Image (tube, rainbow, N blue to C red; front, side, top):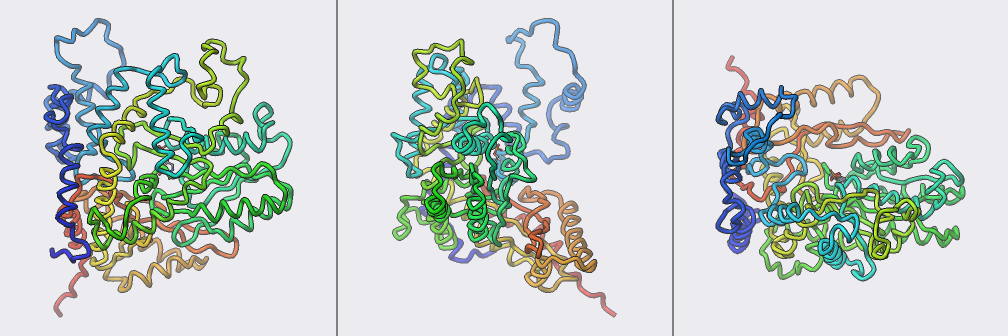
Length: 569
Ligand SMILES: *Cc1c(COP(=O)(O)O)cnc(C)c1O
């Protein structure tokens, strides 16, 4: 297939990304001796062979037996196992046959294959077994945590001397901190008395947000039905600012406290990116107008989107990396949005996603470290720590007690080895892939791309039967205008069924895509309700995926999408 010039990979860019692949994604013992360990090498070797999903167990020596044992075994062995007798076969089997993220075809959801330095870094952290709960248990690891937090603060535009951060258990917990910071600041009595005591409040988030935006509220004991305002999303899946203004104004008019406004920069399936500056300005203006002293805390869920901050200082005019024309303008638009991240009071970083660090590695960043004061629990609860050191910790404010340091060490290694430039190459490379995929898909009959303008790593689409639907754009438009007519439901279901069947029948060729129940929302009806349209998606975060893998996938769906020729009479 010929590649139009706008999508071509510049030779200088190719050299750079190939260098990144060789140095940081090769699992090569020449660069990273730890992968030369015979057991690690055998695990990696098996995975590299990319055995087809069916038959993979058979290809593993004694695979069937080991699998049966894994599924049946329920007793801890009585005796000891001498390491000289070789590694535990069950351990090896489970590692070799865990999901293979190194496979170039792996574009499933927002999961990535970690880079070599982050694996190495995490292993070093595990070896040291630092516990970040307290400096007594972490010593130098606590300084490493502070260093990474300062580095991330500088990248995002926070003052590194004032900002704080906490490495925690996943993006979900980062968002939990975001909610909690707002709740404890504006409803301090909630600390001891819970949320239903005292003043009326509403939490605000976006309908396009990740499910953790809701599950966390339930965990916090927030009355989701009555005390949560889910603001509408626009067609781009970013928050509807006019609707947000209406809701916030209504709250303040009724003397109702708004602890937290949860925004999202990079929605999971469609990469909607909320603007922060207008929300920040709106909040400040309304707080002044209504004389509200404790302002709503603005948290940004940037679990996926955060790596765009590596481009805040990129010279888009000179384009030193040679990012292709199909990708540069969209990247610049998103980088401009991320330059507003600094207006958030806190935000979520998942290193474990687009940051190429092994699980779990997440960091909640807080613009004003003093905000953590509001989370402090009574010192009397913490009897067994050395009080002399407590001024230097967030011990009294963290949700967790023990905090493992593997995620921190992994993140730190990724940052120090890849540097800003390495991350820029990786991110730009995946976006070039996403755009190439969009371009190829747009040539397939019956395909409608979802929010292509959002220019994130995720590419969602709906596929219609070309024998029935001649114009996918018009069909999607019809589907978006939800109404109660039974003919409408039938037609949407017919289309969804077609795509779902094609998806299941096709098997996984070239790229391992996912089925998503909610790839697009319909228009809001007069009651403010909207429906979900399902579809398929691929998320391009894998540095090993190449145009050839994309071409292979496209050929396989083209074969299905070709309209059936009418039979000769
Ligand atoms: C993945 C994701 C989360 C949840 O993060 P975990 O690390 O899986 O807990 C939250 N928000 C968004 C937008 C995400 O994509």
